[in-house]
Length: 315
Ligand code: CP
Ligand code: NVA
Image 1 (cartoon, helix red, strand yellow):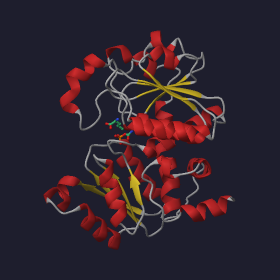
Image 2 (tube, helix red, strand yellow):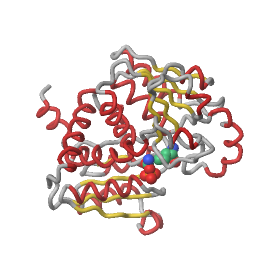
Image 3 (tube, rainbow, N blue to C red):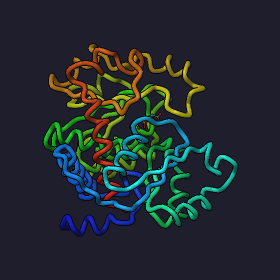
Image 4 (cartoon, rainbow, N blue to C red):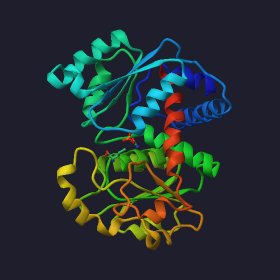
């Protein structure tokens, strides 16, 4: 398929999870994001969404997602509306379906950060404009697309790369497994017992990986995962919405910190990834996240570029 055909096929679609896209489509977003990044750095304006509005619904906190989407819409010549749950009628019982139908009459796209993934699906079902998943309890596709872009920038290709994800079997781990399976990256996930990834998402990643002939594995041994890895990835031990489990999680995850002792099992030139926000001294030692292997701020920057590519393609 030509790039023009891929682009035409993506227009009007929702961006709910990476599993809904082909390898060529994810590569299209990455290539477009790299182009937009280069243009932005060169001071070239690209008002591809002049006159367009994005509604951004937040049911959870955010620094990167909010600022990168809002800034991205501005750079594309459009406008973004920040809508927190407490200020919307959703907070007083208006249904997701009615909200989707009403907002579709005003805006050209919606981004939502919420709890259950079914909420994003319900919004999409009743919306006539594209819906973008800005994080649910199950997935964080925009983050992983930015991570894939960062890998592509740093390594020049996805071939022969091994990622070790160490920590909670959460939304980040799920999107990473699926993204790696589609793009052809070996992905090993190491979690404590009882904090494994969702097994149907793991099975889906394994299935998708067949086409690329790459390894999708899970273990309870962080060293096994990190052995000879090109990339070590971690995320918070307590995700948003799970705060009441914080103390038991601190105990369960204590042997899963990414520190020098663990990282010495990776390749000498390994890169450290974290979606942020980070908790130094918990999932990652300061010496790692603030050290020479860390690319966490490049990842954070790429959220802006990749989301501009998503917005300008779907809307
Ligand atoms: N990584 C990420 O999504 O960050 P925020 O929670 O700050 O949006
Ligand atoms: N797993 C984290 C990611 C934050 C960007 C959470 O859901 O809180």
